[in-house]
Length: 240
Image (tube, rainbow, N blue to C red):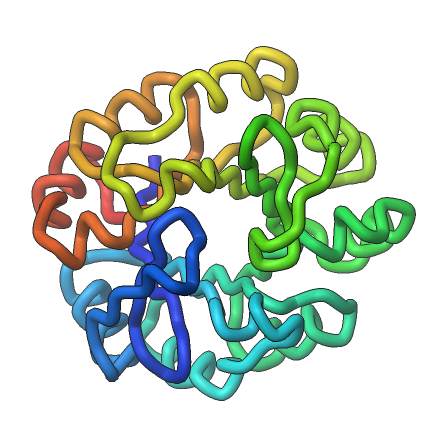
């Protein structure tokens, strides 16, 4: 299983939110590229980057950082404010290996197949779950979409990889929502799932791996020393 260390960006800083609440923002540094370099030096190969400012504004605000982030040698998984085909294309041209689409898929399901046809596995479908339904628009808006039905529909349209975030667990360190991932895999066993929200220990990572997830995102737990990156990599038996 792949561990994705996270860099969340707001006004050029490395930050984390708690449960998607912009009023509960904690800053961890002013140099995202330096932080990415530390992850690369530790043996990571992927970096999960979320443009929180872009997600709030509805358009990306940190694309200018992508070339320097990519120069660290990390493969970049980037999202936040990518709500048009043009924004997705711009992020890929700027240096992202994968781009995450969430709101765009919720609002234009009929156009989703064209996205997957054009970019294939470079598109990660973001499924953000709050109160049993899919949230979007930077987690500010709530749909009536059932996560399982939404994921199954996207699979039928060509999606393969999904970032599934439990909004209630995000930034809390309370552990991942295992029941959410278990239920999604039970109905869509062919889906490649990346878990986000609540990962705080090596045991969390091993539980997700044993359940069959492809990857997991960790942010606050790494920055606050709750989860040791070295121990996590050793436990997973491969670089992140």
